[in-house]
Image (cartoon, rainbow, N blue to C red; front, top):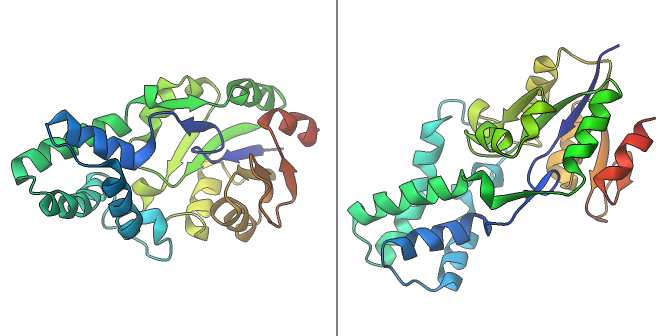
Amino acid sequence: MKKALFWDFDGTLVHNSGGGWANSSHAALAKFGYDVDIEKVLYHFSRSMKGFSWHSPEVSYTDAIGQPWWDKLFKHLDVFYKEHNVPQEDADRANSYFKSHILDYKNYTPYEDAIEVLRKCMEMGYRNYIVSNNYPELELVVEGLGFEKYVDATIVSALIGYEKPRVEIFRYALEIAGFPDVCYMIGDNPVADIQGGKSAGMETILVHTDAETDADFTCKNLSEIPQLLK
């Protein structure tokens, strides 16, 4: 019998100790001598959410995956740079630094029980897969954090052109996993993870939040999951 667990990444297995997207952009500007108030950066990110593909999950973008995904995001950042009189040469340098900051695995902190739980689930006969709305190079961060020993594959929206909760990304994950007989989607987002997983016929586990949801199970900590699966 094939058994699989599909895990969200940010907010489920890790939290971002590096400050996230806006703080990474602020750090990039500061790196090249631009003293822009962090509140202005945060405001730009909040008003231009359409720059992030996961804020428009109804839109598919199979023709803009990989590096083109970054190119689209950089165009939204360039708007902010122009508003603050940052020349294009420095904007390009800031974008490059911004990307390297986002891809630095040291800016992510695994939940203290994450690796142990992945290991236990693997010993119970489950294969672990990450399914994430994220940038194309997420697998490099997964490896840097030491998850690769316990994760069979990392399925990333920016490499296939569909965002959770779209059923297409879950169907893709199920195909990668060989259409398991038993499967769970585990995540912290009631819509992207729970509704999305249910739409694909998975059982669902909500973690790290007490939000209203129709998840099959709710766990305060990841460490509760192995016992639940028994």
